[in-house]
Image (tube, rainbow, N blue to C red; front, side, top):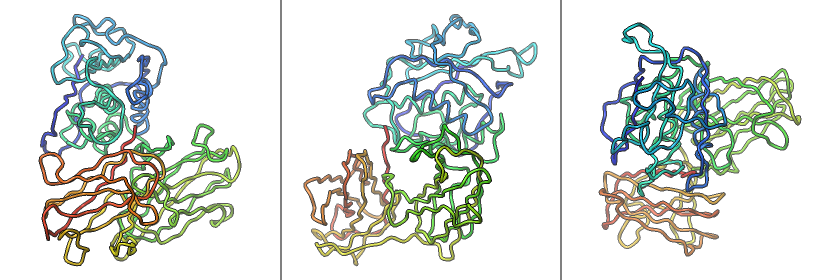
Amino acid sequence: MRNSILLFLASVSMLPSQAFEVSENVWDTLQATFHVGISGSAPSGDTWNAAFIRAMDDWSAVNAFQFVVANEYSDPCMDRDAGGSGNNVSGVDFTDNVCGAEFGESTLAVTRTSGPCLNSECSNGFTITEADIVFKNDADWDVYRGPVRFDGSVDFERVALHELGHALGLDHSSNDSAVMAPFVSDTDTLQSDDIAGVVSIYGGGESIATPVSNIYGLALVAPEESILSGPSDTTNLSGSLAASDNQLDGKPLDLYQYTVENDSTIDIQLSSSTFDPVLYLVRVSATQGAVPDSTFVDDNSGTGNNASINQIIQAGTYWIGVSSADVGAQGNYGVSIVSSTNNPSSSSTSFTSIYGVDVKVDPNSKIDGELGSGDALFNDRFLDLVQFDVTATSTVRVDLSSSAFDTDLVLVNVINQQVGSFVLQNDDFGSGTNSRIESTLPPGTYWLGITSFFSNESGDYSIDITLILP
C-alpha cells in the first residue's frame, strides 16, 4: 500500500524539467470500477460527482486503461483504519482525516492503492486491485477552469485529475507544467508528460487526444499532433460517428481543435464509406466565438460524396467538425490535413478608429506587439489598441507583460467605435510591473489599451487572453 499526497503551494517551485515517474504498483487489467457517490455541489453549482467523473474520463480518453463509473457510494476508508488494505472496492469522498491519520497541513488529498504483492517480500511492488481517494474536508473547494484563483479556493477537478494519476500508478513528475507535478498550478488538463507516463504503463491508441474545455459543453479534443507550425505539416486522424456524439440538427458531430501557428494554406480531406460526410473548419477567438470570415463548410467537394476544404488561413485556433448530411448517420471516417507556409508569420487586420488611433483586430489568445514612436500618444505615453469580441457572457482574464517597460492595461467596451461606460484599468499586478484584468464580460466588442506607466517608454510586449470556464 502507498500514500499519494498532493501538496498545495502558494507559488510554483522551480523544479528541473524532467519526465514522468512510474511507481512499481500498477493494475494488471485495463479496466477498474470507481464507486462515485459524493454528495453535494461546488459553489460554482457543478456537482462533485460530475467533476470527478470528468477527470476519470480525461484519463480514459488518452490511454488503453478505462475507468468505469459505478454511480453509488462506497466508503473509501472501509477496512483501511489502522493500516488496513481495504475492501477491494474503490471509492472516493471528502473526509476529516486520512482513514484515522491526520491530513498534513499542506495536504489536499490522499490516494491509497493496495493489492497482492508481486513477491513474498513485496520488494517489486504489488498489483493494484483497489484505489481509494480522500479529499480534505475543510479545504476551500470549488470547481473552476483556468489559472489558480487568488482567493484561496482550490479547483476540485484538477486535484481529482492528479489523484487519479496516482491511482493509475504514476508518481509525482518533476515537469512543473504536468498535472502530476507535486503542487496545484494553473494547469487544469492533462499534459503531454502525463499522457506519456500513463501510455508507458498501459499503452494507447495511435492517436491520443486531450479534452478541451469549452463554453458550449461540447465534447472537443485536441489530437496528439494538433500544433501545425510549418513549413509543412501532414497529419491524419480517424474516428467514428455515433449516436452518443455531439448533435447538430439531429446529426452526430465530432470536434477537433488544431492550432495553426503561421498564416498557411490548409488542405483537409474527409472521407467515409458508410455515410455522406460534411466537413467544418471554424476559426475560434480567444473567447471561443466563431470568426465569421474564417468559417468554412463543405459537403461534396471531395471524391464522390466525400468532403474537402482547401483555404488560405490566418494563424490561430481552429475547430474541425466531422458530421453527416443525413440525420442519425453513423460509421467510420478518416481525415487528412496538409498545412504549408512559405513565409512564417501571423497577420492581423487593422482600421483607423474615429479617434484617429489605429486598432488591431486580432482574435488570437496570444498577441505580441511593440510600443514605439510610430504609435499614438496618450498623456505622453505610447498607446496600442487591440479589438476583440465576446459572443457569450464569459469570464475573461487578460495579462499584459513586458520586460522592457512598466505596463499599464485598460479594457473598455465600444459600440460603433464609441467608448462605453465599462472601463477597467490595471497597472501592476502582484509584485511585478506586469498588468492583469479579470472580469465577467457580457457579449459585445471590447478594446484593450496597451500603454506604459511612465512617459515615452517603449519595447516589446505580450498579451495573453484566457477564458475562465466554470
